[in-house]
Length: 206
Figure (tube, rainbow, N blue to C red):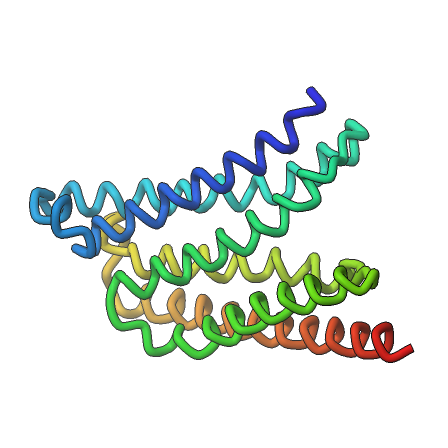
C-alpha cells in the first residue's frame, strides 16, 4: 500500500502522455496516424483525452493525500509529484494549442508556463545552495485552479466531440467562464511566483 502514492503519480505521467498524443492525433498533428482517422474517431480521441486529463487531475489530489495518510512520503514521491503536475499542465496547454487557434487562451497559458518553468529553475538553484523553498497554501490552490481552468478550456475545445448543445446562448457563457477561470488561475500563478522569488531573494542574500 505504501507504494500506491508513487504509482498514482506515475499513472499521472502516463495519462498525460496519452492525453497529449490523443489530442495531437485528433487535431491532425500526427500525419502517419491522423490521416487514417474518421471524424468520429477524432471525436472519440478528444473524449478519451478529456477523461484522461480529468483522471490525471484527480490523482494530483489523491497521491499527496494518500502519502500523508499512509505515512508513505518518499524522496521519489517528492521529486515526481511536482514534475507530474507541471507535465500535466504543460501537456494540456500544448494539446489545446494543437486543436486550433486559441487567441483567448494564449496569453494566460503563456504566463502559467513562464511561471512554472521559472520557479522550477529557481528551486533548483536554491537547492544547490542549501535553500529550501516551502510550498505555500496559495501555491497548492494555484495547482487546483490551473487544473480546473484548463479542464474547462479542454471541454470547450472538445465541445463538438461530446455532442453538446451548439447553441451560442449555451456555448458563449461556458466559454466565457472557462476563459475567466484561466485568467484567475494565471493571476494566482504569477502571484505565487512572485512570492517564491521574494522568499528566494531573502534566503540567498542573507
